[in-house]
Length: 414
Image (cartoon, rainbow, N blue to C red; front, side, top):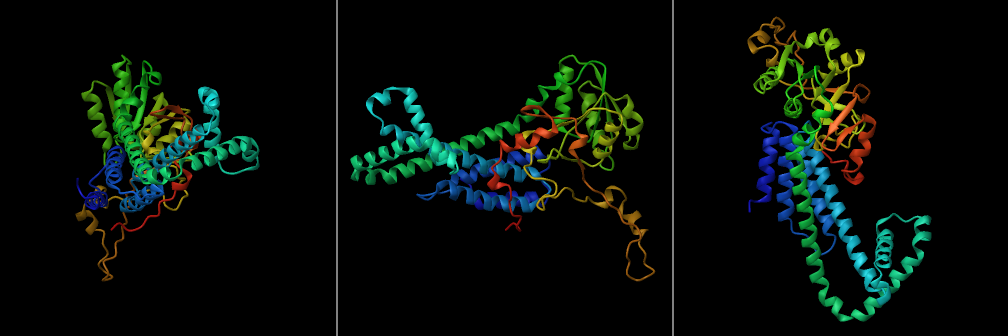
């Protein structure tokens, strides 16, 4: 097996040097790295889940610091932490249920309803936070389970001490196995997110519609092509997405797949939006408030769509859902690209002021990579799990992340 530190350092270098591009590829590789770390992690006899969480958090802090703009890295780290907590709770509930069943009489054990009720009551006592209502609800069951535990301990005697270490080792192996299986499912979900989203295309794209998009998104390509495969006839307007002109790449790909495509300049969006039935775009990340980090230029498109009452639809895999808000200090919404994408270095040197002797530039070039689209400009999100309104995103995000893992301190990667 490769050394864990070597794997982490190699991935850190790739993140720092921007050798990994795209949220999907970054999320998948991050999940695979964390799976390797978990499989090689040696857990103590007590608090195995806590030790595993501590190890993943330490690595996650380094990964998020290596490239803070790639939000998908932190999303996957938080998802894995949530998985560990969920599996630990599940194993705890199962062990408590088994303990409570040992204290039942023969008649009660033969009754599946009584057995299930006792196990559920014992699990609730352990897993729910203490409150007056909890105490009043579960007092009889708690007394029964306490009596059962006392009876079990007195009858077991020395045999419990002999099997304690074996049980701990078995539970440790069970925890790692369950977590790795859940991470494998996460990796599979990331790998197939395009297909899951594309299956919904026929529900949203109809005959003779005009679709506008900007940028080059693999999810958008699959979504549009899936609609064409279902015999939908429509036209696509592609804004070129200066200065990187990713729209040119997207247009060529759509034409190669047989879609009628028209390339327009970014400045022509307002002029052409009145002919458009729907705007369909990809996302770099979806924030907890329903706002979207998108390729630069899409905020202008969203404003044009709102002005002309055109639906603005965002396609995003579950791995792009970020449990943080735009105002969180650890969220970096933008990065500046090289000025050479707008002006070559020869043209820039002509704008330098050498008369003062300092060579300070008279011309400054700002080349941001991303836009932030507020939730009020988004009509619909289409994810692996279906279509959702922006106001529902925080509830969807709550199903995939734990509140204890939202903050990953960004520290310099070693």
